[in-house]
Image 1 (cartoon, rainbow, N blue to C red):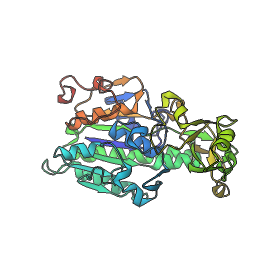
Image 2: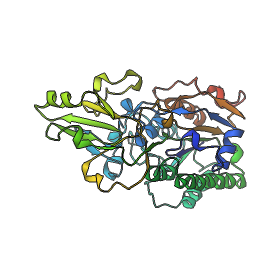
Image 3: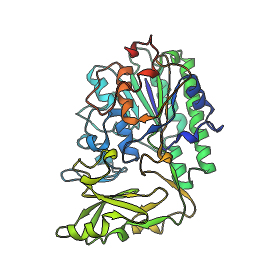
Image 4: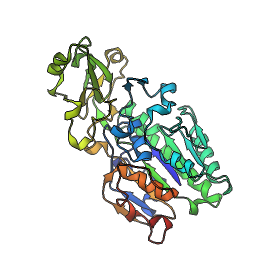
Length: 383
């Protein structure tokens, strides 16, 4: 079982001539109209939701940047925090598989660098943006082509390139299309390698993304320090979902300036966020959460001068926004052929992964019935 992440890829990016290999897998297998990310529609929260079936509010990765009263500060490039299993609650699929005595191998999946419950994948690697795509393909193709005695039962591969291109140049840029062609060629090479090794017909492949991407015009940016005086409220989460911790003795002042509807965003107390987001119970969610409107960025003042000119792309907006939609494609011996399914929530992926790997799923927020229709009736995974 191979789980593939194409970071930042929206359904509308496919089928335009840039992704023939991915499109072929979708046509020959199963594809969803779209997959709805969990709130917030950010990279780390949703990657970990996909492999645990838990909403970010339950698994604890509530943002790409966050604070914990005991553990301190967490951000994507903080190696110590990312590798500390105390941040990562729940049970990711590789931990469940390892507990069951099954070998797993991960290449840069968020959470796989940490010893969750004291367990890591049999083989795992630190994220390295400089790792060439051919090297990634070679590594994963090698794992899946090993003899059955050492071949991992579950493996992952991660491509951040579409997300990076869309952030820098916008979701409708030529640079994004170039990145899509690059990762599609990599998937084509991976499929060919598995076919040559004689293992493709025994390999279930699930391709997902964590979220989509929206266009942000150059002028549509606000400074987070202008949202509330730093003397009144500390910014603890930045991006399209901005979190504030009122300073001691300044709760009323912070609430008066932040709560409610503003021109480019809206703010709530954590316990009063829209119920459909299923967010706000975890201690790491700060007391006040502000959601930017689609097409607007909020950044610290120190980064304003470094902001590149021109249109860019962002995510982290309301998961109900069409531009935030993610992809789901499944292909392999367990899956039906030529099937398109309705949209579903990404928490439903984990129960499917557990079924394909052959383990009892850990407690999760997903519905195991949602993706049963994707499986062939005669497949062992369907029962």
